[in-house]
Amino acid sequence: MQTTRSKAPAPGAARPDARGRARELLPLFAGAAVAVGGVGATLALAGLDSPLRGPFTLFFLIAAPGAAIATALRALEPWGRTVAAVAGSIAVNMLVAQVMLALHVWSVRGGVVAVTVLSALVLLLLEAKRLRRHVARRWTS
Image (cartoon, rainbow, N blue to C red; front, side):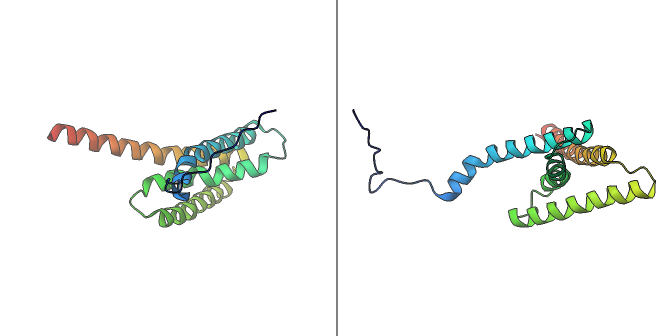
């Protein structure tokens, strides 16, 4: 029977640091977050009973507006952007809940749809602003 040995890194070889590994894993975490949020929204909209419905829907309700707000605040430092995005996300959810309760139209599905629409609207407005800047830059060049 033959055994294989793993080679130890050479004494002067560069090892990837923790930040380098975190940057490599960032797309994986983003994809997992989108999948979890999508499953949560789907479970809430379909009305399926599942033990994962509550946590996944809550994750979606925090992550969707948080991602939209974080995209709008790219000029801030990462920690400041994270804190502002989470606080803004909670504010958006509370605003949606208050308006729906005041109008006597509260439902879980309606809340998920309202938060989705508001988050998508913020992202679409940001994209329109970026495209307008791109066209203006193109015309002046």
